[in-house]
Length: 553
Image 1 (tube, rainbow, N blue to C red):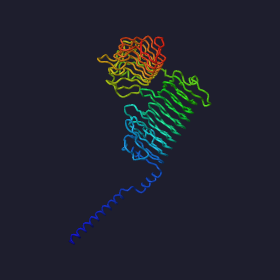
Image 2: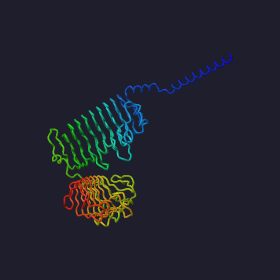
Image 3: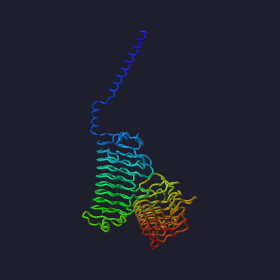
Image 4: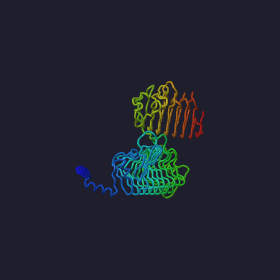
């Protein structure tokens, strides 16, 4: 018995020693992998200073909070890839809010926060859901954002969400950032005070650049707002959208290359000042300033190469710094009536589809010296986009879309319409589509789909957001649903054209101003000769036509 007890005690002692050994070994391991004292001191100092340097999405989300600076290293931070995405962030200062196609990150109730990147285009914040805001701040104070680019990830489809949304915030500063589409609005501020947007680029957004609602003390300075609505099917609503706000100053900005209904649209805004801004190369569909319930103060702004049909809508208009009313006539003196480039053209003679495509560009005259130019035979048919054209992928094949080629002429060598044909095979594609082209001349050729079995769902010529278009002495035939389809154009003339055998009708125009049709022939059509919707200033063979709703002839 004693022997057994001794053996048992020995085993217990051995186990105890083993446990101690493991504990000691564990302690030794911790000491071996411990961070050096100087590194630990540096980390403690960083935490005490409230500076957090991060290199991935999870660390960025974890670092969000008051009284701190988050420094984003170079790289792309796709918020949609966070490990907490759609769940709990584990951080009381931010959360994921559900939208139609995903979640957006919301920073809330956070004061004295700075988010700093390594520079525009170097640090990129993005999000995949098209209905999400990239960054949304709710009830935050004294927030600074600088040194990064933000926008939705590049994916097919239009966006419904914006880039930066500020809700009930105070003292927000956005500087040296790039905010891009896909995203409907660059900066959206609602119920905010003391907002500054400076030295930043806002571009390619589909709806507007900056929206300010129910806010006051807003400054936009030395920013570039460009290409808003330009690459979309429809133009943007406006560059600046201002509602029920006060004390808004927009100064020293460059506003260029935009396609929009208005440059500035304001309603119920007290004290809006635009000073020393440069407006250039903008295409305005409605009017430059849509002001309702307030005057806009204009001081030292310049307008270069802008297409502006009128300066004001039926609102309050504009005043100078002394409060004197600025009239349409005064502003008309600041910009030439016709700003489309009319310099010398380079003439290029083409004999096949490849030469035709290579010649497309501004200030160019393309002369067709071939019986047939079949676009479907081009070597890069359906390939990647070029500077002035792209292939639009339609149901049964690509269609040619020519974009931004101002002062372009396409004509036949001898003016004999029946001797020269531009055609395409796909039945769902338009033969030639033009978007954002100014001073465009088409003359002396025939265009239509190749003769093949089956019905067509595409038209012959389509114009979108084009200005000063002349189609002269052309034959436009089916198979093709329409001979000419124009949307949101200004100043378009059809003269001595033969439009025939199209299945849906001859000419359809929507939201277009300044239409002249002279000595055209319409025959063997499956619909009406001329269909007009929300059009104005229409003349057919010298007779004025009401273009608001016309379906006849």
